[in-house]
Amino acid sequence: MKVLLVNGSPNQTGCTYTALTEVAGEIEAAGIQTGIFQLGQDPIEGCRACGYCGKEKRCIVEDKVNEFAGLAQDADALVIGSPVHYASAGGAVTSFLDRLFFSCGMRVFRGKPGAVVVSCRRAGSTAALDQLNKYLSISQMPIVSSQYWNMVHGFTPDDVRQDLEGMQIMRTLGKNMAWLLRCIEAGEKAGVALPEKERRVHTNYIR
Image (tube, rainbow, N blue to C red; front, side, top):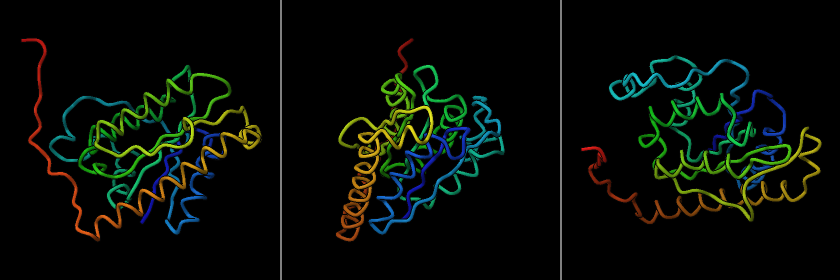
């Protein structure tokens, strides 16, 4: 089994990365492989609403979105990490997730556990968490929680490490993720399958 963790910060080893590594440590301690995918500082274009992905099952823009979608095919779970910018997720990770989930969300992530983690200096964390969790819930992903909302506080990685409660929240999240993955594995061995999908219904409110 493998859990992919997305570092949505432009800083490769900053505060968001510090939180994600704490989560990953507990997952690996349970014998489950992890990998951190760095968005980095390359530009991430927003969705063009062109409809290409509906036909070709991949985004028309060839960048990290399609690269990650390929990796996610074989992953068993997802953790999204983001800094908080103006009480929401960062612009790059928002564009990344818009295109990722629009092009392959339900097809790739349905039934796979997911979690989100945010890092902020002071405030705006709960609004960003609410934004990010919507990508998971619309894709029928079981959302993994912790003992408190999945956030850390600090302006530097050293600050984050001093957020003892935040670090504990990350460790608890990692343990809960590993536990749920083992439960799903046991269920699959016992013959428990994903719920049958109904044909999608779209209701238009303007008639």
